[in-house]
Image (cartoon, helix red, strand yellow):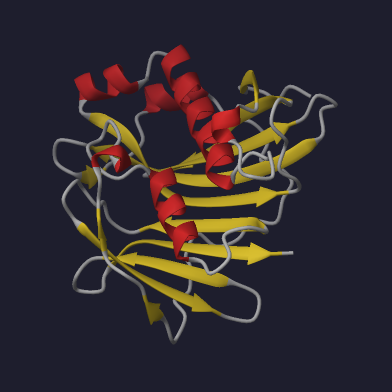
Length: 240
């Protein structure tokens, strides 16, 4: 079902996006969602180059991703996204990944902050961008807080540097790369069906990441921190 002001593209799950079970990975799903929103921005004339010229841009504040099942290698999927609201400095966006029968395999909610990239500070969303994106009805899902509570006790992991392949067009670590880093910290990276990520500050090439891990009753949390222990990102995972 097409939603108002929705953007959609179809694809096949590639071998390069699949794990050893021949299923798309969680980062593969997140990259599809990220690509879909970027394609919409390009189609509306507010894409990467336009944002660079204007010194404006959207920075991801949080993800909430829910997976019903991981599509298999070779499956045809439809990826959909639409803005579902704007308020002050923020933009809200839904995503869904559907199989050939139109059943949702995964879906998501994200919060974005509109930034003056030259001054490095949030500003009120430009009304022209609101007009171009429009917005549609929010997806029916259980919306969690964009804030992730820090566990009381964590276990320190082995520090590692930010590599060049972690960096995106904004010259900082791409949001999906944080999720991949966080999954590597988990004792078992498989079986994840719920993920939330809260982005605190941007890591850049050459920074060191000091990971911390904690497991509580119904969740696992990976903290990706700087040398002083302040998080770049917090990522929460839940299993069935």
